[in-house]
Length: 118
Length: 115
Image 1 (cartoon, helix red, strand yellow):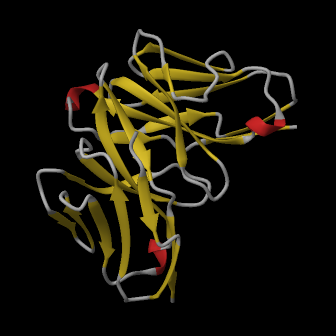
Image 2 (cartoon, rainbow over the protein chains, first blue to last red):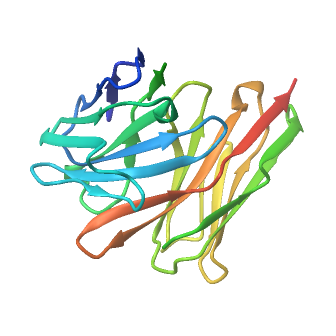
Image 3 (cartoon, each protein chain N blue to C red):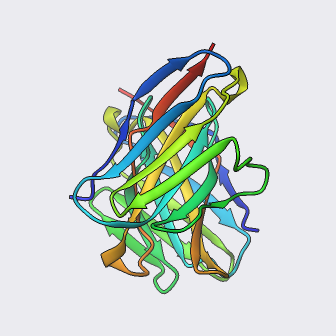
């Protein structure tokens, strides 16, 4: 149980275009989903936290108009990188909390999406 | 905000030996401390976690200790095997005003188990 999937697993796009990444909780309802960004050989940096049906909370320094997050259902959150530039190339990872587990804190991570902007 | 420091950044051990990774955190409000294993090109996988009301937790070859007073926690892997080779991240989590949880990660430790 507690599986989180991401799609696509990797994507290459041209500079100036937009890319959408999907994050799905497959066997549980995720009241909260998190989006992280990871550069090579570095740690995970939280970009934003989203609760189902409400606006995402972005971390300081993360442009909300550039990284659009939608959490329209309890099993799906999307991250759209708008007007992508080469510096947006990174490994994007989502995680999800099981709403039934209440306050115990455990997050389940997706396998990540490798974005390369040319 | 929370600051998590992790060391060492790299660690090489002989197969069968033990490996220890240490982390410190700054926010006394943090109450949940997970450890993740990340293999190349994959997302992190939770391997063990500990909450602030316990001092030690063990799961087979993996154990975690927590010293809440000193604000540090450690991961211990015994009888290491080549498949333990990966990057390990510690993290500290607390609940912020507004009711949302934030997890802060350490910088990671690249563990290499030499056969």
